Image 1 (spheres, rainbow, N blue to C red):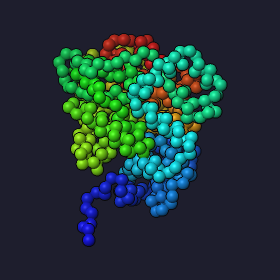
Image 2 (cartoon, one colour):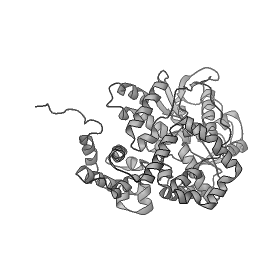
Image 3 (cartoon, one colour):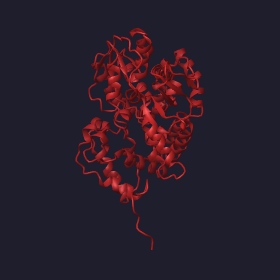
Image 4 (cartoon, one colour):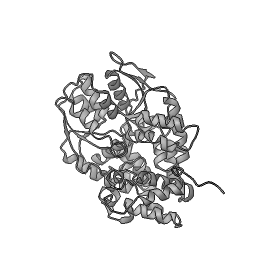
Length: 438
C-alpha cells in the first residue's frame, strides 16, 4: 500500500486543479474587470463562468467546441486575478485548461493552419528578420493600402488580415552590440532580453533601453544565444514548447545579476519560469534563480534610482497599463514615477485602465473581431485624454492601439517608456520624441 501524498499537489495534476477550482466562491467581483464580459455581458465569457465550465469538464463533461470557444475568447489579461478577494489563481487555471485543449481538442483545419503559422513565425527572430525586407517593400510600395481597401485578405482569413493590419511601419533595424559599456562609474551589470517582436519590429526601443541603462551606470550584456522567452507559447497552452524556450533563455542569461526586460509579456513569463519548470529536477533551481533575477525596465530603474540628468520634455503623455505589467507583475507606480520625474512632462490617466486593449499575445490575431472592439474602446479612451503621445511598454499593445487609433484618424504618436527617458537624458526635445513615436 502506497503512503499518502504529503505536501502540495504536483503541478498540472487533478489535485492541483481541484484545489484551484475550489478557491472560487462565485462572488462576481471579477465580472466588471473582464474585457469579454464588459463587451458581451455573457456569464460564460466571464472568469466565473469559465471556472464553472472548467469544473464541469473536471467532472466529466468533454471538451466540445462550444466550451472551447469560451476558453479561446479569454484574453488571459489577469484583471480578474487582481480584483479577486478570494485569491483565485485564474491565470494558472486558464493555463492548465489551454494546455489540455491543445492536447485533446481537435480544431478545424483552417484554425489549425493559422495557429501553426503564428507559432512557427513569431517566436523565431530569424524568421521574422527574413520577413522584414519583403514587408518593408510591401509597405513602401503602397500595396498595403490597396490590399486593405480591397478586403481580399479579410475574405481569405480574418486572422491573416489582422496580422497584415497590425504590422508597424518598418524602418532600418539597428543591431545592438553584445556589450554596451556604462557611462561613468559602473553601478550594475545587467543582461538585456531583446525579444522576438520587440527585437525585429521595434529595434529602436531596444536601442533606447540599452542607452538609458548605460547612462544610468549599467554595463549592458546582450547575449547572442538568446531566443524567444516562450511567452506566446506559455499563454497559449503549448507547454512543452514554452519549456524548451525557457531552458534556452535560462542558459543565455546565467552569469548576470539582473535580467532587464522591456516587454511586459516577456517579463511576466520569465517571472513564471519557476512554475513552468517546477517539476523538472534538472532545471527547477535554475528556473527559480532566473525568475528571481528578472526585472521589468521600469521596475529595475526605480530600484536603482536616478543618476543621469533629466532634461525638460514639454509634452503631455497618456500612460497605458499593459496587462502583463500591471496585473501579472504589479508594476504600476514605477513607470508613472519615472515619467513624472522628467521636467515639463505631464502624465494623464486613461479611463478604464484595467480593461485590456485586445492585444493579449496572439489574441488580436486569433480573435480579431473581439480584439478590434477592445482596441476601438481603448483608442477612444486614449483620444479623450487629449495627450500628444501615448506611452506603452509592450510591443503587442503598441501595435494594437496604433491600429485602433489609425481607424479613428487620431494623430497620436506612441512611444515606449525607454524612448521617453532616452529623449530626456539625451536632450533630444519634444519634436524629436514625437517624430520617433509616429
